Amino acid sequence: MQIEGLIGRKLGMTRIFDEEGNSIPVTVLEVGPCAVVQVKTPERDGYRAVQLGFKPKKLTKCTLPMIGHFLKAGFDTGFYLLKEFEVEDIQGFQPGQIISLKDLEIPKGTKVDIAGISKGRGFTGTIKRWNFQRQPMSHGAKKVHRKRGSSGANTFPGRVIQGKTMAGHYGGEQVTIKNLTVVEVIPEKNLLLVKGGVPGAPNGYVMVYFK
Image (tube, rainbow, N blue to C red; front, top):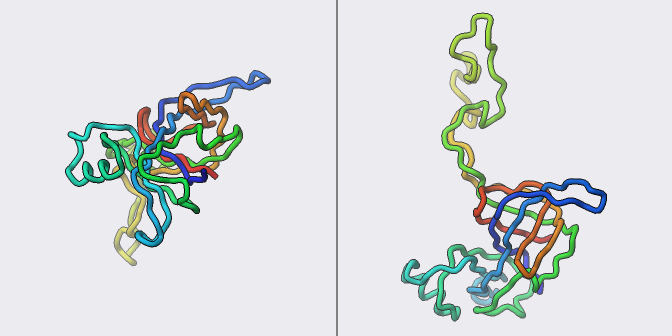
């Protein structure tokens, strides 16, 4: 079974030790099980893909169109998250099917890309948002220590250029970390341990893309 990726949930971070006693920081992910809700075909949709659902929820919490969508796939429950993953061959996929880590056989050392929504930090200044340096703390500097410097040009063009790095909303956007190494796989518990950090807060949804 070949599929581009699976939906998961970030549980948190910890560390494990290798054979030499080195400490390895890892992020623990709960990947799957994912339910096949719909299969996209070239004849009907123009491309090949599989729509997966993750984390069941009551049908009473779904909208009427989504209730019909889930019932058509043969499920008596809804899902909190739906995501499409491209596949080269749709043979072997059908609505109502459950896909988990046991079906993929991911070896240790595999490289994966993980996408998630970064932590929202609200309205932040330029030092936190863009890593600006602060201004002098002495020698006559008053109330400007964490302010940015000049933002505009001279008499021409006489305005602030569009896209100038300024204070504003920071975080709360999709971030993809590439080439993370799989350190440990525990398929019976649907757990995937990857080296390093992963975008988002604990219990946040992530998309795991396999190489």
